[in-house]
Length: 147
Image 1 (cartoon, rainbow, N blue to C red):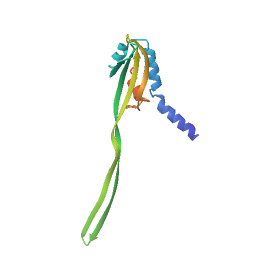
Image 2: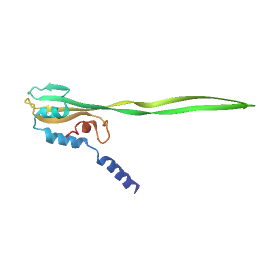
Image 3: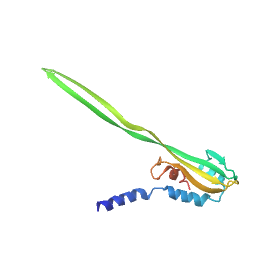
Image 4: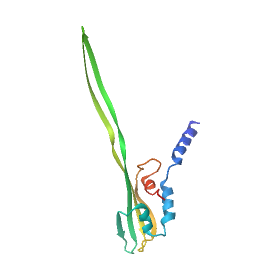
C-alpha cells in the first residue's frame, strides 16, 4: 500500500510537468519543413551557424537560466557561566560553517539542421540540464515551451 501511495504522489507531482519529449515533438510538428525564420521569430536568433559541404546549415540555439542554491549553516559552540556571590560571569566560543549555496547555471543547446534555403530538417539536443523554473522536466522543455 505504501508503494502505491508513493507512486501516486510521484505521478501527481509530474503530471503537470512539461516534458522534453513533448516540446521536441511540438517543435518537430510546428517547424520541420518550415522556414527557420519562423523559429527565430518565436525563440530568438541562433548563437552560431555552420555551413555543411552540401550547402545545408547547422544553427546552434541556446536558452539558459540560473537557480540560486540555498546553503546550510551549522553552528557549533559552547557556553559556560560562573557565579561568585552577587557576580555572574558567562563566556562562550563557537563556530559557524556554511556548506553549499551559490548559483547553479542551467542550459539547453539545440542544433537545428536546415536546407541551404533555411527550411528546417531536424532538431537535435546537444546539452540539456535540469530546469531553472518548476513545472518543466529540463531546460530544453522550459526554453521550447512557448509553442
